[in-house]
Length: 212
Image: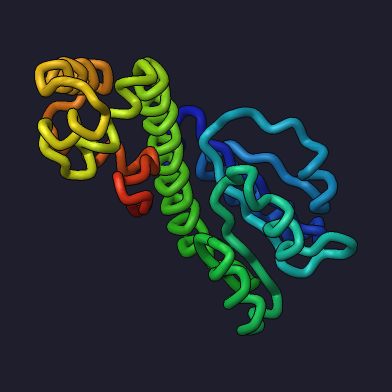
């Protein structure tokens, strides 16, 4: 199960649960760090490692659901909630907020391992998407101001002649800009360029935005 650079964070205020989960993860050679409270987890200096968070729902001071809300917007690791209550409202709130899985105590080892595997896969996928967006934004930043004016016009479906007229340049010049855009964006095809524009949230000529 262990893969280089994968880490499980376990947050539960019950030392018996932490010990049991730690023994299970250690037996599977899964790297992990345990915490007795949400505050301890928040204070921990986390590395940029592929990870997931096994989080107890009911904890004093800061509950698991409260911690989930605090982590929103910080690109948190996928969350696997565990609870001794398993009440439906908590489950619904957790899943709606993006939790990967919700398990009840006593934890089924096989279910937990399967949830961790799925969480690692989700985290890796998100990291790849994030890295792809950083690369894409870097390519877009290399465009000249004029090329940034040309991109939404051609990606929005305008013919070269139409786009050139909008910008007040010749069609030949427009074609040169288009070629430069394709090269700098490293687009394999025009359809590929259109998808890139959509991912970047570039507005179409009418001012509407594509869905990312």
